[in-house]
Amino acid sequence: MTSIKDCEQYFEASFEKLELPEKHYEDIEFEECRFFDCNFSQTAFRNCKFTNCEFVRCNLSSMDLPNTRLFGVTFKETKLIGVDWAKANWPVFHLDFELDFDRCIMNDSSFFGLTLNELMLVECKLHDVDFREGNFAGSAMTYCDFTQSLFTRTNLRNVDFSESTGYAINVLNNEVEGARFSRHEALSLLESLGIVLVD
Image (cartoon, helix red, strand yellow):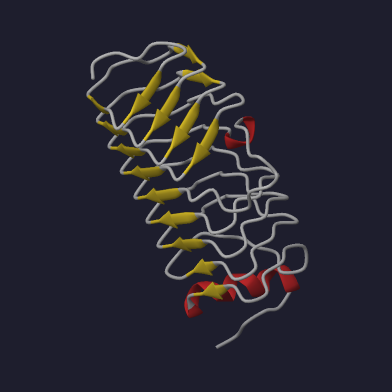
């Protein structure tokens, strides 16, 4: 597939090496579609739907998703810098949207206030990402770098942070019951309690 048009429906389509930065699309439905090595940086998808789609080695930095729905979407080795995920449409009757991010760069993005249970973040770079006031219960956030990311009034119950680094999570103003942390990195959690460790 070499082009995308407004108000179309695409099923089981494969898009490869599309260069469509800074475009604006509306009212498109993608189902079971795959995107390889595409550039949609600063592109807007308004009132669109992505269902059971996969993005591989794509550039989606600063992508805009006003009122767009995503379900069962996988991102692999993809750049997603500066994406405000809160602009998308997340129906309240869902808690788990089956989103999977694998080895992605997601710096300067925002998940502020979202409920995305069982979110999958594996080997991702997440510098300066806003997770405040969100509900990510039951998620897997493993082997990730959370340097300077924000967690305040965030539901992190039963989240797996194994082998992740760089997080600064205040255990007094976040829900962390049942969360799993690597032993060495978990020492950073004590800083929020004013505890000083000595050898």
